Length: 136
Image (cartoon, rainbow, N blue to C red; front, top):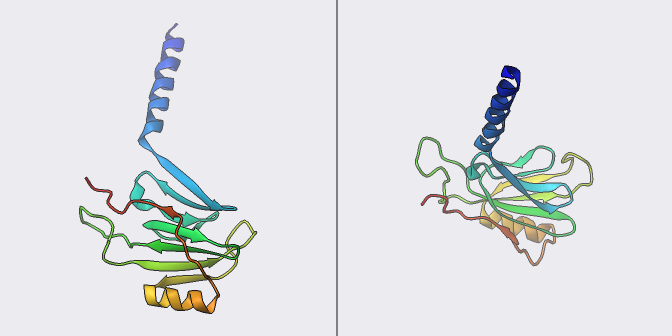
C-alpha cells in the first residue's frame, strides 16, 4: 500500500511540473515555424534551428521567400522588447530539413524594400502577426 501511495504522489508531482513550461508554435509554410518557449518574448522563426532571433512579430511568405519583422530584445529592463528598433529578414525557402539557403538580415526598412525590389518580391504582406505590447 505504501508503494502505491508513493507512486501516486510522485505521479502527481511530475504531472504538475509540466505546467511550469509553456510553448507554442505556428506553421508559416512547410517546416518553417514561429515558436516560443516559456515566455512570449522568445518568439523566433525556426526551421529545425533558430533562423531569426526573438522577438519576431510579423511574418509573410511567397512561393520563394519568407520575410519577417523583428524587434531585438533588451536586457535588464521591465520592457524586454525594444520597440524603437525594427529589423527585417528575408529567407530563401528550402525543402531541406535545415536552412541551407540564403538568410538576408537584419535589414533596415529601406534596405529591406531595396532587397525586395532586387529579388522581385512583390505584394509583401505580413499575414502572421503577433502583439508587441506584452506588458499590461
